[in-house]
Length: 256
Image (cartoon, rainbow, N blue to C red; front, side):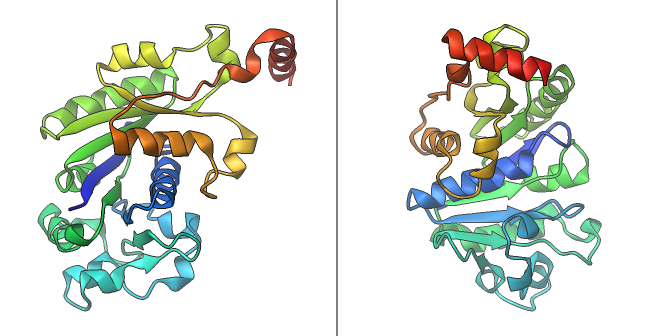
């Protein structure tokens, strides 16, 4: 039976959808059968970001209105054989999709898969509640900025009212050079501030950005391992900024 995990955030622009996709790819590379469910009916760009937009025959609304079975709407990823996309509709207003109807679709798919990652709209509007109501677990994506952490805290408070089995945090775009000099909060400090365990850390890095959807990205693989095993080993974003060479890198970044 699939673990149903909603991936959400307090504010837009923190990389929520990127995290959902990267995590889905990393889990599929571990041999897990994964569905990426695009429940963000406002932006619904998971298909574009995964490169399968031209492969879609049916979407969630087609399933809900009985034009196809749930499994027929799944789009297999051309590169990752264990990864499937369940696309949302680009034409039907999201107000026509109820939490109950979405849950029925996911209930039909859950017995045949290991994970269903539900990409949720940012914030706490109607789309957030629709997605959260269908999930058993939640991952809140944030950055280390004050505004993102404040919004994440509000989302976590609302999430916990649904009494999910677990709520965890992923700190995205953490800048190692700032962390090494104390210019931003550490993952431990963020965990204490949000009173929620940090499941993983993803660094701000151009090299890692290029590999985020290839299945070779180590921080995403570590995040997937933590999710699968229940561990909380965090990627060390400061490793490149220690010693003489690290100080040089920090100066270059500060002056660039």
